[in-house]
Length: 183
Image 1: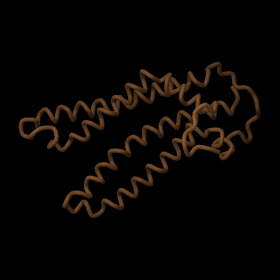
Image 2 (image 1 turned 60 degrees about the vertical axis):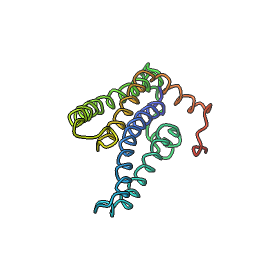
Image 3 (image 1 turned 90 degrees about the vertical axis):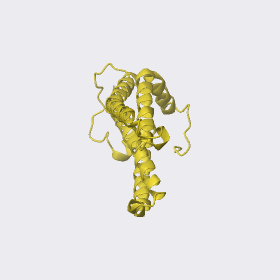
Image 4 (image 1 turned 45 degrees about the vertical axis):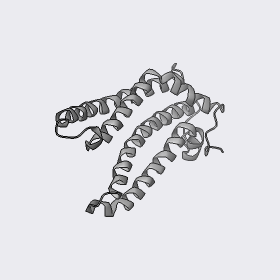
């Protein structure tokens, strides 16, 4: 394995972490957007907060695309190979195996973070179900749906890690074109 390949793997693993962080921005956007439609004092600051979240989301999205799909460009731009002799590193692990392990670990972390929160929200909903007129009026209903989706995504990452790695590898080999990532 060459140092360039090692940097490629490290950057892709970091890109998966950035993807997880990107998922946490989505509910914040919906929460702030819902404040626009309420007649409370919190709604006055909502446009500035939405702009800030859109800015954060665009930065994370740019970083995600760069770290997952444009790693060679990133290695060249940051000059990560500079000062490293072109020696072969003796790691007999294929890049796709490392990416699959990283995907499974990211899925486990996502599951470990969101499953307890989902269970807590479901328990709270069950406790308040007698007082509230159904799921639509329950204030935490959106969060239940969001954490349920994140739990499903984490299960998908754990069980279909090979599919995710194959998609990343096909993009690296040039078989998949994603709009906006052309050179």
